[in-house]
Length: 317
Image 1 (tube, rainbow, N blue to C red):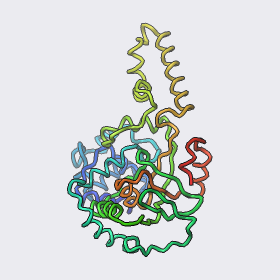
Image 2: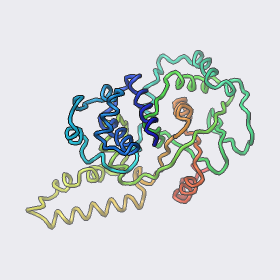
Image 3: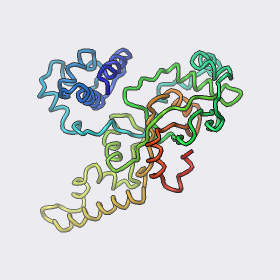
Image 4: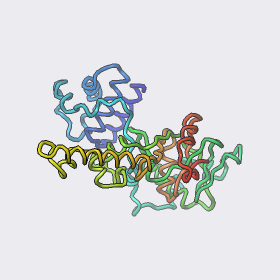
């Protein structure tokens, strides 16, 4: 990732005084460290120079030693995995819009400023086979690369800054239009949800403001996935009853395996991360669309198609 892009994201966050958790700031610093070939603590020092520390919640004092940063960061941020993908993104974006004060007639006028061709009905369609119809929106995409993204499984990339006025304009423009509006379909990537995704979602649900973290479909298995020792101690003491402790561990491990195989809860579902077109995608869902259409790359679409369960094939287009 381009370090200048990350710096620009931080500047925009600071300009809006958008408070972020320390964990989110740490992930930004981790990516910046990878992009610049420095340590994560050194990355924080650079990003603090452009104001990251001013918007962090529970940040170490400015001027703290590298050792203090490393101690606060801990090993949980050393994973090479990309940014977490958790449900609840739509709910967080929804909080940006004051629906009680939303005047659709006024926002519809603003919609024309953002999307003049769509608002005027002059959007040029090159191939009708590339059009995908939903409730009040038509998505102009590419045949053979389109998937549906549903509210519970749509993500935005970290660092994406939403413009409240633009979101409100899209909501008003869709709801006030006499006919279906046409948008260019957003571009995204797909990720099949596994145990690690569920575990991270539960662990960070409170910090990231999620209304609903991912689940295995079983409350005890969710707890076991996050803190196995805590759950096992409810059944047996490993020192006093080692056989019972080991037996219960084997039982719960097998239940986790079966949950993955049967794709219980959120396991096996596909999370769609919007890489370009976040306002259109999230604005349409906030306007009441049951799902949006998203374009995937050729390779991603093939992986998606091969990994989808037969009963869920309707989300492929």
